[in-house]
Length: 182
Ligand code: S3P
Image (tube, rainbow, N blue to C red; front, side):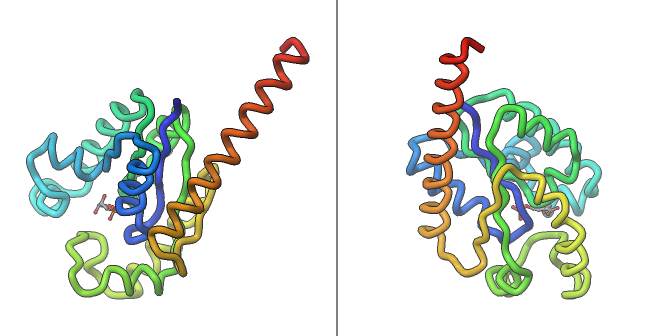
């Protein structure tokens, strides 16, 4: 059973949705930022502060490579994980990749003032630039779910319906292949 991989910008709900989705499916949930935290015994912002982003990205790739070899996981990635094409291809090889999209307005209002993400510390213009630049990476996902106007329950429900449809299509394709002797 392939993994379900959630990608998307910071604040799109990957971790919250991922946890709930995993509960609904009775699968295990993993968050790449938490895994990095466990391996390094440092929080994301501490790694950025003490060792810089390059070190963080290298820890992230190691975690991605390990998780991509497992099965039946709901994986919430960090917003920058799939900027590295090797990470995206490893995750996609063994997983259904779903991008959670949200408008910049929705993201800023969700994040509010209590923000400890190193890359969201700058002015609005800098965040907007990052958000726009990354959109063409997130659209490489197999499926995109817009979370801007939805609560967690609604997003989880939409993903569950999507997965049901994907599974049905895959089963019917497999049956067609069997019947045609492929
Ligand atoms: C990052 C997103 C963060 C975390 C790190 C870098 C990014 O994860 O991995 O601060 O580059 O977008 P979330 O998307 O879970 O906030």
